[in-house]
Image (cartoon, rainbow, N blue to C red; front, side, top):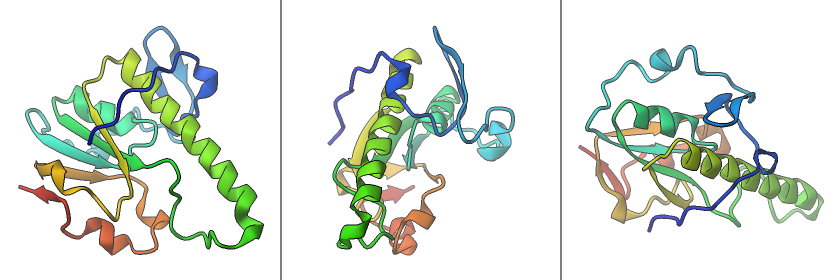
Length: 167
């Protein structure tokens, strides 16, 4: 169920959605810089000893912040070959958008795995679709959904009870 780590060594193969500070590399700018306000962003919840499912991990910024706070994190993100729901993918005029999105998602995934390695993370990763979480995830104490609901045709499906159960 969990993805095998991908070895990424070159930051040029990555796209960081969030600004991060990585060992041996330093600061990497992203579209969003949550670093100064991350405690408020995570609602100052005590995650130590908690099992957390983070849906929409992207480059892993939130995943690694949860882990720094003592959480056992299961990161979940979009599988290769899948796309966000709203695009009518059968429309041939959108093939270049779809190809560009797939390439960008690979770069974001590379950013996750580069960070995972450099931060010596123990987080586990599952790839799939947010509307179809695997039942094998089991019980979690918290579920964190970042900026993903607007990418789903049916956002309620992603937040309704499914494979993962919240304790």
